[in-house]
Length: 596
Image (cartoon, rainbow, N blue to C red):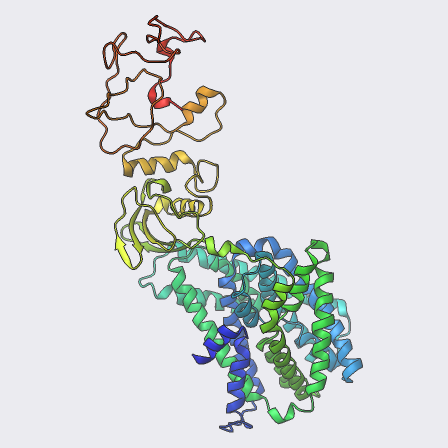
């Protein structure tokens, strides 16, 4: 627990803290535990990486990833190839490794670590375009890197590079197809099947994600890409009990990181790292200052991103446990010099994670990267199905910058079949009235029937983004007429008659919502139904009784003159004015309910 708190406060990935725990427990540490099973470390590392990728995919927002998906795909493929070539050349010419060892090191360290990127970037308020590219890249680039490391560690040399490229493309395509299919089928099943206990939903989601990895590997595709895509689809499918599922996946991700990092710390022999310290620093310097920026700028050249964003993406290419796990592949394959490869990668990851992780906020500030306040206005909605009642409970949390702040319950205009039944404010629960004003920090409990569940959530999100005029101004959330009918059924007020762009003054008056007639008080006469004189509009304070429509020649107060020159009343001179200047008679005048 202390390691988690220190990691979250310092900005360092948890990698370093848990690696330190593993080293302290190892053969050169306090407990002198001897562990040298590289094969077991690789298996456990693969399993942990599957869980970490699943957690990262579940937390990825499709609205942020979708616009940058082509850029992330190019960086994680073309960019990886550029980085491998530059880093391998540095390892060969500057450090003196043979080409096979140099290519293995270049491939191993070219992968950004999903756990390190997720843990650091999600605490920084960076623009969605930057975080989307970096998170998607860290989820995508593990697949081609694993294929490259396995190919370079194989017994025979790679004869034709184009054959290797074709194999990588085929495995990525198979993995992507498997991941999308399993993710879509899993989300479809979880949305339409009510499990007997809410605690089963998180387990089911993680089981589906792990199944995507297994299916992708069995189909000779990329299981890592399959699990990430399947988890991304599940995470953006509005599944029941989503916050609980998200918390469960986050906990499993932390557990996987802790176990993997401690095991890697046990595997390393600290006194063997001294001889490989400076070679690791040299390779890491070329990787950080030359290979990574070159791969980012060249691969993102067609997308016309600002140079400062490319610089930040270059600096944010964090390495973590994934390169260290991949460095066990040549050890298991029996590659000559594999122990030195492992030591160089281990030192490189530790040194440059210490440098890049804590300085990332400072670099973003120096580059004047603006903060992204979108997350502060995004409603948190949790859905729980009520199978026997054929309905849903929607738990809605109003964030600090949501435009739902200041909106009355009646102004939500939820569809018929949905209603706000409870509001929690300052640890106090109460049943709202139609005039209850919602505030930031409130939590709402909304009950919706099956047919209107999606429409109710869409309307809530539309109000959260556009305020109470979202439907009137053409924003999301359904038509104003449909939403208004639901509001009128709860408040007793007439429903709006439409929000289309009517042409002409009469059409615009008809498009206005009908106002209830003003109830006469003891000192205030009622307004005749046929009178067009202006009156002050007020909100109804009680039930509205029937309004008597006056016949020709009748008035609410005999002898009272109405100072208007446009109706069939007596004007200020006492002369009769049966028609206004346009020739319109009193019978053609708009009623009070159609007034502007």
